[in-house]
Amino acid sequence: MTASRVLRVRRPGRLLAEAAVLLAAVVVAFPLYWMVLSAFKPAGEIQSTRPRPWTLSPSLDSFRRVFEQQDFGRYFLNSLLVATAVVLASAVIAFLAATAVTRFRFRFRTTLLVMFLVAQMVPVEALTIPLFFLMRDAGLLNTLGSLVLPHLAFSLPFAIWMLRGFVRAVPEALEEQARIDGASHARFLWTILFPLVLPGLVATSVFSFISTWNDFLFAKSFLISDTSQSTLPMALLVFFKPDENDWGGIMAGSTVMTIPVLVFFVLVQRRLVSGLGGAVKD
Image (cartoon, rainbow, N blue to C red; front, side, top):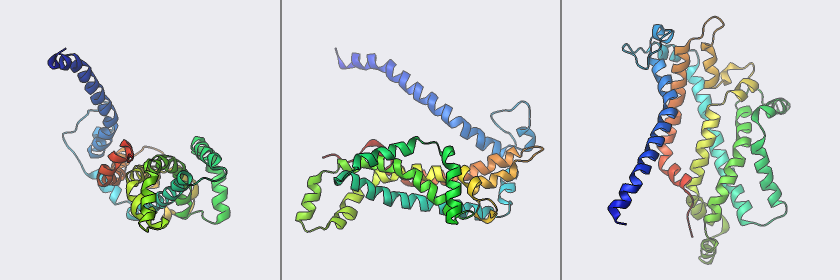
């Protein structure tokens, strides 16, 4: 069979695959497009009984109402602080834990790994009430710490499991060579192993950042009376009204919340692709 015939045989399947990928991309992107479109639509078009997938008179009134909201900057800063703390802490702890369970042999290591999986299976909603009492007894209610600790606990099992593959892919001969050259274990850990598993750390950091940035359940449960500690998802409650919801403000606020996530993706996209693609090979 000639090469040209092989290309002709494979081309319909390739076109079908590309069409399926394009359709999936459209389905995923359409809600985002509708959110941004609704943020720019005037109130009359948003409340229309015949919605159109475009607008001929874009308006910034919805964004103006969002930024004129009292303490919006404080809410944004609180969300940024919580997300940054969770990402940095989970990256360091997960890296050290993944290295420990991969490179060292100790009792109950398998049990510990199984517990990581079990922790991922428990619904967050089932643990909200016990976590509330735990935060109350620790005196952390109405503080940003009540958001950092639960998200850190929920992000670590996934991060440790994912980083195990990256640490395991680094050949042990590399560590032996480093020790022969006089490198201590700590130096090998941070100057050699850490850069090699950095793509995996970036991939897990994206998961931690998104889950923390979009959190509403913990913020609603643990930030009861001190509104100065509220985060951006809590700020959207202002636009939910008993008589009629301000959908323009809701969509504009959601669009503003999405921008930091997009910026984070742009900053780490190269590392993210390599991290999802796999680890280094021997």
